[in-house]
Length: 237
Image 1 (tube, helix red, strand yellow):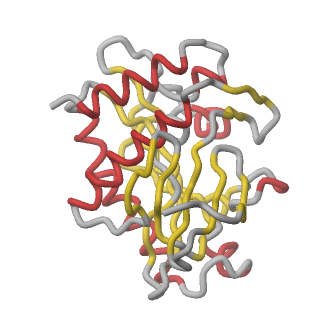
Image 2 (cartoon, one colour; image 1 turned 60 degrees about the vertical axis):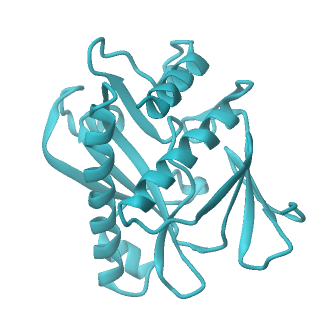
């Protein structure tokens, strides 16, 4: 399967058509961005690590009944997946307070939440990905029906119920993560995009060390080593 026309380039990936109208190829980039693109850099090998990590996690979720767009990893930086109509809602799942949640609501950083929090952000860089409630999403036409929003929340919690204990067994706290969804050719809502340290926060259970893109956001250094460690723990039995 060869990539053909470039149809989209985002912060972390390029998207290409293939000779199959129902399949696309994502090229994982080494670019790093934070704070809505205000901070930019690059880390050689980062894209390949995210592709490998996402591949393993999509396989894991599929085995547990979560429908995804994943078809196969083509090589280090390329993933073959289904074409979908993207739902322009970023679904944020939070188990521990940090980042914007602590900043905006004054919840102490590191506080374990009494229940898993699921939030919606509008996937719109020009507006800074603002928070959404259900009525906003319906007014904007991001989904047609309330039950689609309910399904996004339900799927996000199901994914968290799979990934949280999985990473705990690997010695990592799954602090929070961002999910994206789309509709396949049959209109089914499925998980898309990626699941990697670019859009998840992982804290080592013993040391509390951050093993994700916060190392770039906060200028901690050692980002590639952290991503490699996450992949190594995923691949370990």
